[in-house]
Length: 275
Length: 320
Image (cartoon, each protein chain N blue to C red):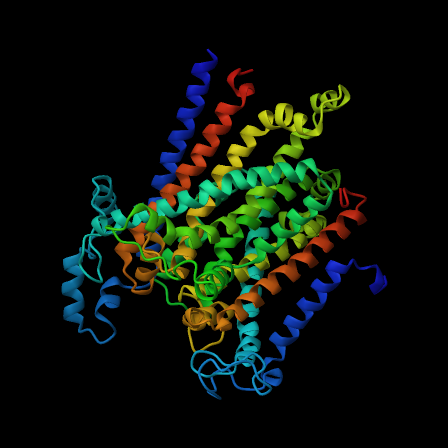
């Protein structure tokens, strides 16, 4: 398929997402300065040497944005991967096995979802240290409840299809049914959900870091950078808005791509399309 | 007979809410007590002697089994005793009272603006669906679900407090403040909160009304020549009230959570800021108490949403 057939919005989304990914992967080679290197005055304005100016203690803002892309995207990707693996496997298993397993898992998920994610995250982080591993685990497990609900609903629909019945009659085990029959057919709704969950992970992580409970300094991270530079706002210095705008740009571009993928996959299936 | 049935449904829903709240209290307690991490250690720091740790553990009752401590905690809460903060030894309940009021005031101001606005915009989007207004509203919704709260918040501060100097940059409120001053202090945070929930509420309203618009009686109304606004006002909206009430309640629950970040941005002395401060101090009793209050408000609003749906749907009043 040719590039010209991609809708304008999706194209912008794809380009921006690709740029963010490149920045994240090649951060040490792209960034003009080190992430904790003090190179100039406090909150220096934008200039030839420092394209975005400097931050609250004189570090190059552009370099920190690039390194921050790496931290933020890495943690969000890891948390999304965890929440999808956990949520999908448990959701499919609950739909296929049914019985007490389904009952216990579903009630547990109801319970977890009855507490706002941010509040529960804060409660847990009050006793656990804010390391990258804890952040990924907490975010991944809390978000897997949403994936569980979706994948259980999708799998319950597929589970009653004839080809699943046929596989069971030929004597395939539960593992085969889940991974070879249900998973391939449930992939398209799950993939479109992937984009939304990733955005949610980015926003959640940024909120935690902004509150000082996420990624710890001196590590650069977009939410944390907003926190570091927020005191400049009252002096009319917009340095805090730049990382915040990056978060927004990443979220919007992933959203545009996810929308497009969703429309395309439903079109392929002769489904509802744009309707 | 119908009335008794509805009463039974509502009673069931309330019982479920209470049960859920109990389960949540267990979860919050377990989440902070069973996970690795020692309260005594975090108060005294890494350099504490084993003897000092042991003394503090005994003083705090940490050597009792977990279920005993849970019932002591829950019993205290039911009598209005939220315990004392580890960091400054102050009574949590008295520190919370004023802050809870501040938070509710902020959330209330945001709700007063955002609810009618979202419903009107949602109806406009339905009236001009697939037109420019609808597209603009959808675009705005996409942008605002992707914008983090602090982007909106700091942008508002930069524009209205720093550049234009219309409003204060930090929303300090104190007891002796007049109502008007208080209102002036919450204008910016309430605007930020409104922008955070508006898009979501608007889209859900639009979806709920559109769903009704596809019914046969709407087609009849169209065929008998009613104008588009009359159709929405007289036929679509009354039938969409139940889902719309549901939408509003769910978004109020969402607003209560959004308050946490917004309060920190605007340095507003409410529950959210109190929670965040004490999470970084690792002050577990405060975190448990505030977490439970947030969860209780959230669960209650969700419960009211369900009850409103039951009351607004006549079909449920006549059991099959």
